[in-house]
Length: 386
Ligand code: ATP
Ligand code: MG
Ligand code: MG
Image (cartoon, rainbow, N blue to C red; front, side):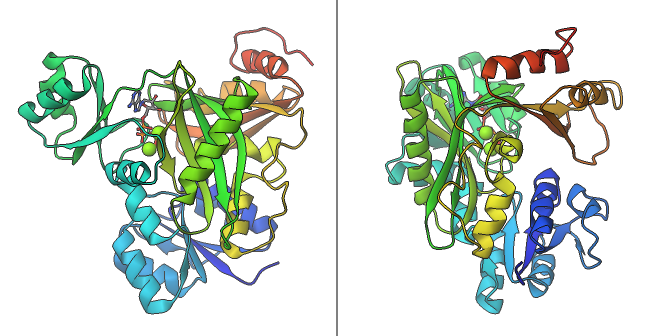
């Protein structure tokens, strides 16, 4: 299909699903990740994968030598090394290293969005001292959210400062990391929109979905979001506007807060495939993974590209997290396999409590049918409808 070789920094489940999508188009992928059994390497029988860290400039250069285009499945990469390798070798990098550098520091991301007139929760940089945290409390009131600027995921790096008496514990919990603070967003729901930009700057928004986090980890995604049509449309516009402030092609996940008065704020942006977009594999014309591969290799992207498969398509995505007992999570997978219109995706990871082991997509013509099927899969109902 295409003679370009795509190098992926990171070899987790997002890389694995990118590889699957690329394989179907005969696009070769090379993975940079520690070890030989990373999820993305398991399903990609290319001998020249690179064994090393996506934060290692030498390894990034080695990857660039083998590829025409570099991309990421994680933003916590060495962006200075990417800039240098792009300058020296001319390898294409999507999204751009500048975009990755802004986004991977969550405070610089917030400042960038605010400068671009994108609605975000107000935030300030903060020193790691009790005095500084108390003055944030004076400014924002309580609760407020203290966040690590870097290396955050699944809420690791966040601390809710509920009152003055939490300040000591907050500093203890987020020790040795650069900090910033955000005004509390008393959201009614959390929404997300996947946005993909083509190599020539055309932007497509997927449907607005509703995400439910449990212990700060994405748990369930409802597609489309169970909100009004106008809120869904507003969220798509905000997501497209937010992504348009960045450079480079590819897929972006835009997380948003829907406030009780209907206002939308961008929470954060992921410059890569995103957990809230896994439903697209079964519910959309093009999956987020194929969209990314097509965008970064300059393949065609027709105008219904990001649409739901049909106007009536409804979907629920359930994350499969490692159970307390090893492999206990396979129980819900087995029930999903016996459920009409449900698909199971496992990531080839060693079982560990709370670890993202896979996900399940349920697709139907109504959300209530998806919900009935979800109840069965989760063991809350004894039989499955339909
Ligand atoms: P991810 O795995 O999505 O990258 P993360 O570690 O970067 O997560 P955030 O997305 O910043 O963390 O926050 C995790 C969750 O914490 C959000 O989905 C939301 O539920 C809650 N949260 C974050 N910021 C705020 C805020 N300012 N006000 C209220 N709740 C918040
Ligand atoms: Mg994040
Ligand atoms: Mg988040």
